[in-house]
Image (cartoon, rainbow, N blue to C red):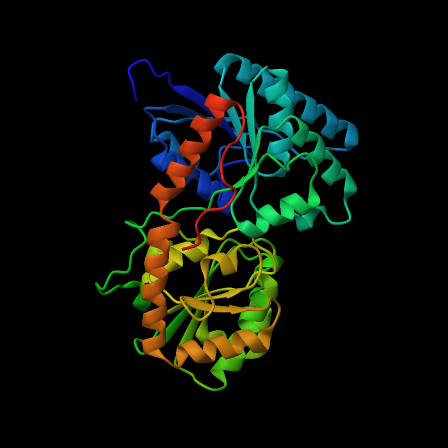
Length: 399
């Protein structure tokens, strides 16, 4: 940076810094954002969340606005809370005077855009982190988003499929939307050969192949099909243990009951929310993500960085990361038979697993490196600050 070049403040607005793909992405961006050029501040509309301490340890300010911290009693109560949040956001933006407001997820996009314009912030970036399926049958939500787009300078997406979905659903975005893939810390997520005590702690026999699903226990993540496919595979080969790592989002009891009904309890481990995902991936032989919908999964590129072969469903950006037959296998969503066949193929060939894992690592290093992601965000911010518009290409190289 030239001595005369001004540091630019960016306020990021998100619901919280709790566990979730968008939240983890923002934390990773904070790790590598060039603070000689930018001064980041994070506004959490609700509580700060579990990742806030990590971000604050980087010297980055995190503010909590406690929106909906108590149950609302009705529409009038919700309206009062919303107005109070807007006033508080506007007041803080007037005090912080950012050059850019960058928002994440639907309600942060809405409240953040309104507050930014009320505070006179010149540049607003909103984001789309998943397909817009949640708006199906809810025209009011799409209307809100369309109105926000009028006042938005850039709309970021994290995969080509999300970009296409955004263009097909939304108005006033044609010249504003761009795509930047998520990135992974390839120094942290790397396959290590040292022996791990984790297998013993989880009571996994030493000769077992370990299959892992890293996703919160929510219906859209396809754990039902994962367990049904596990049962089908175990009827043919018994030396496999299936792991599920993720926070319960209302499905744990149902999935536990299904596990018992299928008679596979001895081969399944529910790990809950884990802070040692890298350690789990290092005892894993095959990683599976069988979501019904997805934007661009951090879990997939973390597994690729750890040289794992992936089995993923063909939704969202999954097939942009995993090339079928190259670094993994791509199957239709909700298709237990296809998932079973893919598992049997990879559990049956150590050579194929290692070859796909090596190719996945190479692909991550080229396309989904955290530093590549940071350079594209930096380029976007600097061009936007210089031009007030987005003269960027829409797609990254697919290699």
